[in-house]
Image 1 (cartoon, rainbow over the protein chains, first blue to last red):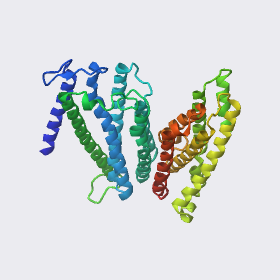
Image 2 (cartoon, each protein chain N blue to C red):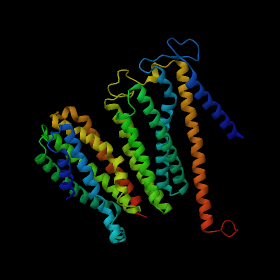
Image 3 (tube, rainbow over the protein chains, first blue to last red):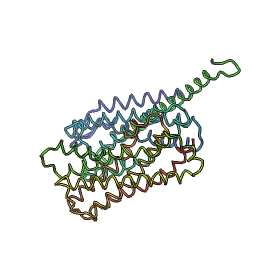
Image 4 (cartoon, each protein chain N blue to C red):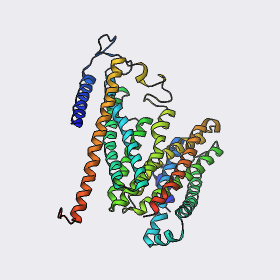
Length: 244
Length: 194
């Protein structure tokens, strides 16, 4: 019963965010609560922020969760933890692609080209490669325990080198993305250029997408665990006569 | 052998054109990366192929094994890359180092990072089924921050930038080396013990 309420709440939240994010007008001097301010240099493109930032945020969250459960797997050798890490990595890959695509579309209109090897783009590209390598590694190993251990080790190694990409490199190198070293705004756009209604939708969107991620992740890892259980039953039918 | 092939391919494809410094610095690390990819995966794969892994597991602790393999790869990387650097300075006119100390520091730190990262990936690869093709796929994202910073530092060395200006990039490479070494030593136990 409780989960139904959550799902309805999430549905309404995401519908509201999508509709509001796309349809609310951008005007010079916002008066009504549903009007967004005009941001110089961004103009109408500003609206994609409601979808680009949450996906990029979830890419990092998913990677964090995946590494956390990889670590947990290496500590306790429980295959359920591996399923959790794997489900999180799958979602992270999806959100990573979404963030790359929305970012490229935004870049086309804001910077003039889809891809310009901005430090941010390099870092998201590296994340994409890491996710890809993780799946390539997983698919090449047959044994379940071995696959879980090796992919956990790899994702932890990637986890200790990834901060270079996401947090350090884009900030010290000159780039076009907000937050770069030569950024004249001296801070993220969120803090001072958005008015309260824009901030509200922005944070609602972040919350909505985060809940969506956790829900999808839960469904994902449960299905992996059940599938493994069924596979085991099919291979070795137990005494009660199930499976086989 | 791979070094000579790679460098001559680059020389042939350039022809008589004069290439600028930034391209030379980039090509230098491209050759280093691919040489490492072709040579360094042998460290653990050869043990698996000859079936000597079990003996090693019995007589030595994982840390000792990893240190040995790391030393082997370090020596290999330093030999290969010294040859590459010498050939480069002989073949390319634009390979002129204005700040030799900075280049040397970059070279040593970059090689250490390269050797450690490729050793731990080689250990993962040797336990996984597919050997040849997976190695560059797994190594590239891990090595990317190291290579990007090293290319930047090599360009600094060409320009004759002082240590003072380049200290942030040097700090990144040092940090990378420390982090990857620590992580490798901590995680190698899990790979080695089946």
